[in-house]
Image (cartoon, rainbow over all chains, first blue to last red; front, side, top):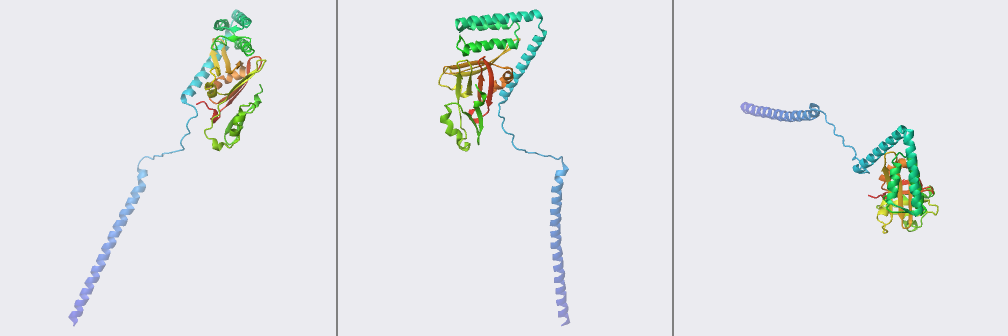
Length: 171
Length: 145
């Protein structure tokens, strides 16, 4: 009887020891898995700090330009040419000697007479316009050239003259 | 020419309308209706008028003058550079109404802008052949390109 009780006690104790051993092993595996996850998370968080920081800003897409770049260049070219011509004109006006100015005035007067003759004929020819341009090229100022141009405009607008070639209208 | 007769009108979309001209009657209904229904609406206009004293005006957009059924209709904005002066001029005609002018000094400064303009415009001149007023409109319905 005692032997039986002792045998039962030994079996029960062995089973208890085996149960505890299995539970510890399972907990150890879970602990290892958790440790691995924590390590992985730490590695992920540290990755951006390990290399150079790159910030990619993606703002709104710029609107398409309203003007073609070629048009912008064309306008800029014209403005530059006008500024250069204006500077040259001012320089010429400043540097013109009294003799040059007198010659320029005489040229403007002759240009006016060419226009008088055209009005008398009622016809403005290409040669008339070329002659007017030659006379004004002797040094006419902007104001003088505008004056001749306005005379041409008035003659056309009031039907006093008919032009031969629209390309040769203004001085 | 009185410059105040052409007006830029701001509805739901920018509307360009010459209020003085009879041609606008047909388009009046279109102009006054909500713009939301008229995306892509085009308004091609060409007109020149000259009075007995030689004063006058031209208005419209370049596309309309270029596509006019009358081959003589045109507008041109010109500049020629000479050694001591620069020749500026405007020239336009619609049918028998033709006019030419030389801009005053203020408009001469705006001439490059006028030459590059692709929308609608209105230009007027007086009896001395001087271009005295210039109005430029950038309206979607009038753009040349």
